Image (tube, rainbow, N blue to C red):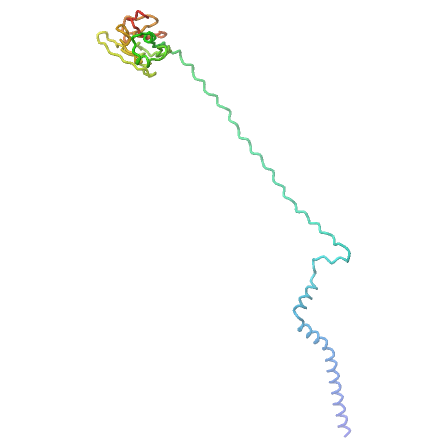
Length: 235
């Protein structure tokens, strides 16, 4: 009987010890369980606000009441200085090339020629229609210095000058004298001022005794073609 009582006492003591240990274990783990439940049931807003509160902020801390926070001075941005523009190099100026000096021409052999009809304008027998086309003063060609071609005759010279100056010229060839006979110059013809009128020529102030085709000119000669109204007696 005593052994049973002791056995029951031991079992009861063990039960008490087990209950005591269980109680201690329960008391030690209770705060952790409460904290875990609190974190699981925490709202998203609270979590984010908590995170915001814990994160460092760059915003300036509020100044005490009655004081103005100092203004931030902006850091000046360095301005890039423009690079100096290089001046364009001046183009080399080419020295002007002097114009070549023409070689002096050799002294040309020249003669002088003039064509005049003042006596025709003074003649009462001249038709008014012809008078109207004649130049004032009767000067068809003023005295002009002309380069003489080799072997040129009075007739050759007259032809060339009239052609170059646009002067009308009309002549007939006379085989008997082997020369040209000038009938009209500048629209003024033989017999326009009477029976003894027509064109004659002089060389150096004298009337040659040959036809104009046979009279060869020399350098320096002066040739005149003149209109006469009296077979040359009025010249």
